[in-house]
Length: 103
Image (tube, rainbow, N blue to C red; front, side, top):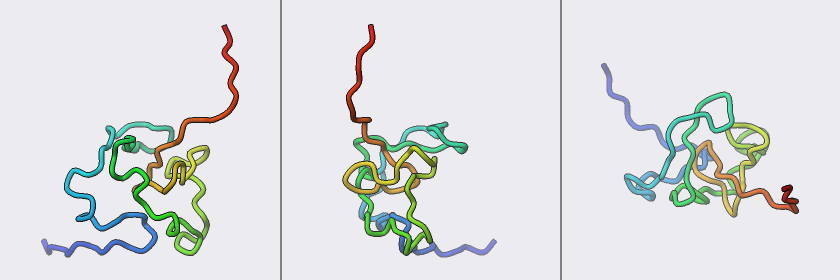
């Protein structure tokens, strides 16, 4: 078997250099159904991957079309807080609005 060299990070994939995050930087949930057709590992609010991406790289220039949702599809928006999260899963902000409590 021939060993392969690590592949460089491609422009537009929203991942910083691994050394900038540290070995156990991402706090991930278990692999499970988080609302899509394929299992995902949800990031948690205390994860260093949360808001650590670059919004400028989430554009049609790199993807051919602007990704409006994360890997799970609508209604999971791609940029939910101040900045895009690293990876395919975007931690979603709580819904806002006027809600009536029914008793």
